Image (cartoon, rainbow over all chains, first blue to last red; front, side, top):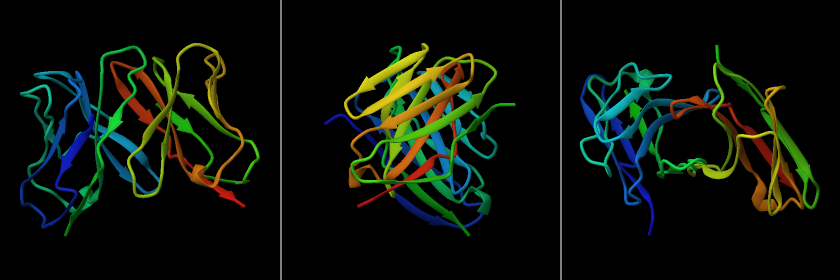
Length: 113
Length: 109
């Protein structure tokens, strides 16, 4: 089954404790992206990647890191999480085709206390 | 700056037609997308427009006017399961994607 998976689905952590949210897709997609979704603000793009070893900043990259060492994986790293990073995070992927319909993962709900 | 506007909430009756508008101002334009998101779930793709005009896909249609920075999503023969948030998103280029805040549609019997 074609899908985007994220782990963990739920995470409660404390300020300053480094964490990684994994994202993996099995569709051989070139493009992957991370978003956060907050009430009243909608979905905002954090980072995206056009292919292996190619990443670029979205609208809200501060406090986040990403890497793309393999085509299927695109982990999101929070080196020192803060309470304002409490949010719902989505990973998405798409092919390099013209319409680039994105397939979203199920989401990770992160709470930083 | 870059801005995408859509109504926050809309209510419609089962079996009716509803139009959700989206206006945008972006530094570039490489296509406009509509996504549907049910509560507690991930967004799912509905449509993509890059040229002016109407794209029809079953009960859903999407329209684009690039000169006016305007799009709408038309939902016909509304069903209860269409109650969801509808997200308008614009790609200004380089595979970036900017989303509007979403329109929460409630379909009532």
